Amino acid sequence: MSMKILVRGFGQGERIPDQFTCKGIDTQPTVEISDIPEGTKSIVLIMDDPDAPMGTFTHWIAYNIPPDVGRIDHASKHSDISFGINDFGNEGYNGPCPPKGKPHRYYFRAYATSLEKLPKGMHRKPMDDKLKASVIGHCEYMGTYSSS
Image 1 (cartoon, rainbow, N blue to C red):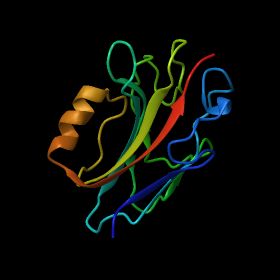
Image 2: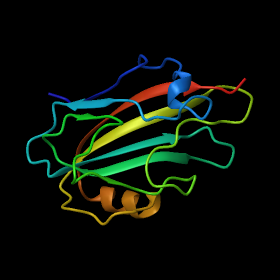
Image 3: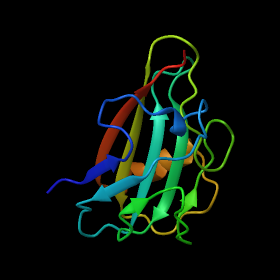
């Protein structure tokens, strides 16, 4: 059985609604993760834009997610969940806000890991380094967005 991710509010490959972007209220969408592999100690969730002008741009890093927490939304108050520093320089979620032009792709990737509790405020590079030797399973979901 493969790990699965579902992002509520839009279909796989579809346009991300404005409410989840800088054009709207910039709230994080609800993410559901299922079929988590046995032996998973924690889940890491990363949202990024590989089409950004200066290279991949990270919008969201959530981690220390217990494997039994199958849903993360704007109201999630689970004390173990930590949020990393995104490329806006903020802790938590900042949604799509691309320059005018062609639509950008936004990937939500969930990683089942063998990682124990990680420190708060992690940046993408140290997180990627941690993931290299600890991923047990992963899945992804993609949406698009363009500014008009």
